[in-house]
Image (cartoon, rainbow, N blue to C red):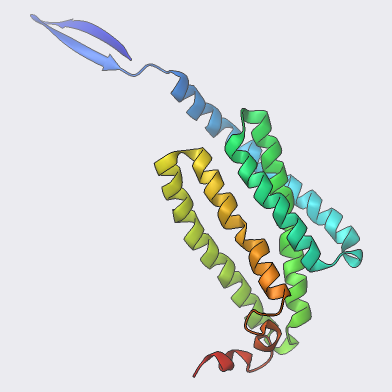
Length: 193
């Protein structure tokens, strides 16, 4: 802070002004790199999607989801430890590279297990579940970040992200409400009394 004394008429006025310090520079740097970091993450996702698409016929969707989810969790957790901006770019590239190889095989699995007559409905359920996860995770992460800082926010996000491989394993074992039966015509009516 800078404090100055001004003479006005017969008296003095003291003015305190915040001087740009280390915190202001950090905020400015964060704002300046937000766009490029998002671009790197998006380009990594695009590239990974292209690689997955070129090799999809040789890969099992569930295996891809599980392996890539592990990288997503590790990349998100690593963001809590980044020492500098270049490391943040690398971690966001890892996180971004996981997005397309999770979304694409998820859609493939949904298409394989869903009767074509109810595919749109099943797709809507999947998208709604994703939106519900975001709606729950965003405020939890925000509260954690406010309470403990950005490092805790990334750790909470990594923990919540770990739910993806856990849910995939439950579905893979066939114990998730007989998923394939629910994706058949009239399948959802079995959930109502």
